Image (cartoon, rainbow, N blue to C red; front, side):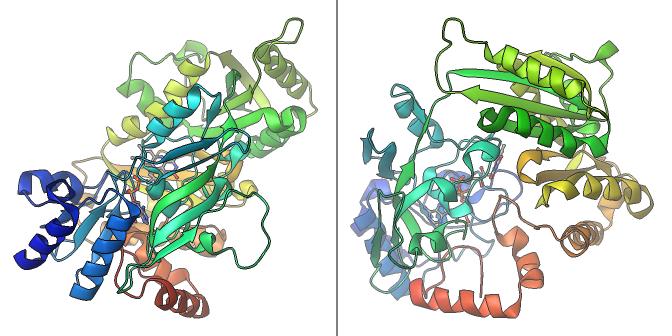
Length: 473
Ligand SMILES: Cc1cc2nc3c(=O)[nH]c(=O)nc-3n(C[C@H](O)[C@H](O)[C@H](O)COP(=O)(O)OP(=O)(O)OC[C@H]3O[C@@H](n4cnc5c(N)ncnc54)[C@H](O)[C@@H]3O)c2cc1C
């Protein structure tokens, strides 16, 4: 537990608004988006970089460990305190004042506590957006710390690709403020230090401000549900789309039959376009977009998509068996219902893995073939960002299954899935959710000692005190 003396001193620095101690107010900060529930007696809510620096300096010299928290939507138990009650949560949720838009540079300097939705709302009137798209509403600092990917990675890349600069507070005795803000897209003048703070879960410093690249908001979008001729045709279909649609292609999402069926069952209002409602083994959501309003005499985007699909249809060994072009909101509604649908089937055990694009379907087929003999009762409900090699390899166990009474079941299952993904298919055990307490053991297992030593050196250089939930060294 954190001593009352310290709590009073920190309240002196931040004022009443900046300190939360009532148990009923602490609960939201102790509870993660999906799995975790920790314990704390103190949440600190600084409103400026200077306040972050002051409380970090105090906590470091007093030996109080801090867990940075932004939107608390992370999925790897990184943003919540452990069960000991000894860690304080450093919430960045009040850090949302500074917002300086540079239209010429197509960039924005802002405080890291802005919600993604609030940022995009402010940008919309300028025809711009921050092009990371996902089914949650995180805050920007958390997105930088986890290097969020999302559904439009194929076109716009991840947060790393769209971060121009940062300001961070280091966990040292001075709460040193490191200003790495930079509005330049090209800058080869030395080590690009900002990169060590992207995707490293806050272990090396607390992101308090940043400069982000912005993109033009699409004015036209066309979407389709595509049925590949077989699993082996998914990649040929993607390559055929890339060849014909180039930079227009903004999403290519894969959805397994089990995941789609679960979504239809959970959200009956979803439109089922398939013949007699029969869901195919695998479905692709493809999206194309462009940034200008429809022009007179120009082929509509739906027509562009339809003619590309017609050409693919005519290919020798056509990779496409069927296609349904439809309104984007209807088609994306199905994609966005997958997570909830799958969760309703039973206990969800989720994996966020990635592969070379050509290995995704082979990995999924391999696991589906072996699952019944290894773990009967487990259903594979995979879906994912095929265009960038990411798969949400979701496994569901009925709530009344005997497997759930066996304490060794989940660790054995995780060990097997990661061993096949990493050792046989040379994939990643964390594609876009970063490392948290949930992935620590796999970081320890799969990271070479030399890289752990280098990370430990960086930690000593930047934030020698305990910060966040991850150990890289
Ligand atoms: C329904 C749903 C859908 C999702 N879909 C996707 C998806 O498609 N793609 C994807 O990549 N992710 C997805 N996620 C995961 C999650 O939304 C992202 O990881 C997100 O970027 C986390 O941001 P956050 O603000 O919620 O961070 P938090 O959850 O608060 O924190 C995440 C980590 O960053 C650290 N941290 C937080 N703020 C800071 C800071 N300012 N400085 C330093 N460290 C900090 C925390 O200690 C923690 O380790 C999804 C989550 C949900 C619930």
